[in-house]
Amino acid sequence: MVAAGLRTVGGPRPVTPTTILAALLADAVARHPEDAELRRAHDLAAGLDPYLDEHTSPASAALRELERRTREHVWEGALEQEMLSGHVEGRFLRFLVRMTGARRVLEIGLFTGYSALAMAEALPADGVVVACEVDADVAEFARGCVAGSPAGGRIDVRVGPAEDTLRSLDEPFDLVFLDADKAGYLGYLDAVLESGLLAEGGTICVDNTLMQGLPWTTGSGPNAAAVADFNRAVAADPRVEQVLVPLRDGVTLIRRVS
Image 1 (cartoon, rainbow, N blue to C red):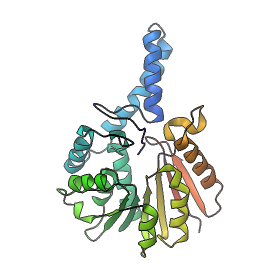
Image 2 (image 1 turned 90 degrees about the horizontal axis):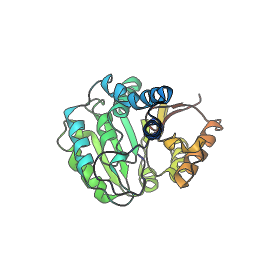
Image 3 (image 1 turned 30 degrees about the vertical axis):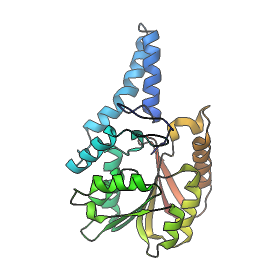
Image 4 (image 1 turned 30 degrees about the horizontal axis):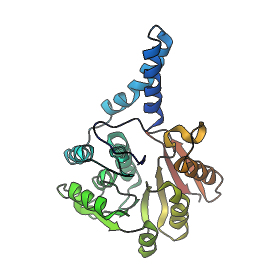
């Protein structure tokens, strides 16, 4: 999820490197409609996400309804509809659960519950997603969104600072999905690695590690700096190995080195 401190009304705005690039190229094409190469560059960027959506297995009815409710809600302050993980990333997380055989999943950063529900749908009947959310109102909204799904009962929402919730947990997790405040990323990673919360052979999945392209462009801001610091620290951490996948706004997969 990426918070931009804007009130959101209507459709989502560009918040990933490819959608931001497509918007910039659209402006350039409008100024130079005669430039065929510029138009080709725009079509490559603008067509990618729709192509991925079209050729990815569809979301469940429950996830589509959750997305609709999130899009139609009027968010204020640091919350916005663009924080939703969405269809393709939701399917990616579902694949991770199935591929790893996960039974216990920890999510740090719930928002309206799309990623939690996507993962819960792939769990066995006795599986669980423990989802940490600091905002009580958002947590209540998420509970309402997942309540009607058959997999909703596998989601255990814990409200409060994630640091407190992590300290209260005493069983390991097969998969950890980190999608919370970016300044806290390194602390959350250390807590998971050092506290025994990551099961043997477990996987950590970290969202927004491309942060709108800001870490490698001239962009700035606290989130961009936090993500850049996190990426450098993970790349230099001898405890782990990782791969940064250019999915949506970037997803980094991390596992402990044997």
